Length: 238
Image 1 (cartoon, rainbow, N blue to C red):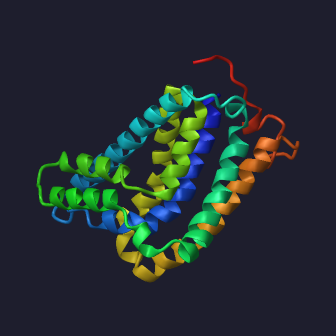
Image 2: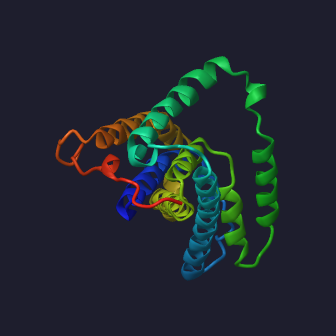
């Protein structure tokens, strides 16, 4: 699979997922203990936080890529765009239609989420600079539907390096929106984040349709070119 393919799927999935990040991780970024720091120190701390989060994503991508290499997923890699587009459509249906209506709230409680948030709260009390990297690492491990979708992509690559790169690009894709929040967080109130959250299923559904169209190689310039994502073939075996 080409690096361009991995970049497209990972980065743009992260970019779309960052809409969710503004609503869910935005408050965390705005709560980072950087108010007493100089501008240079603030940027250093924020970048350390993102480096930690991308490190977690990359490690998870390596693990899932390794796991995928042991599975008989023949024909999945060269059709990864269609597979991922379909998963994103299913994600929208499950998270925004099935889960709110048919799954009791007590079954939605997540012990892992509670444990990680508690540990992050403890780190917020520490003063050294490396704490921001550790906060980022823990943030990257928080349960999140978009991360699950991205990890499914990493698994489908069936390759350790490609799985790690895909998740690294995913992390990079989430950075622009969160950097914007870190710079101008005071402009992103609760009402704005709610509006963004309401638009999330539209963005994810649109991205899913686009990935499916690109994987179908319909010969439509830019939208579904013959040499799109789905045209990549496996050139070597793990």
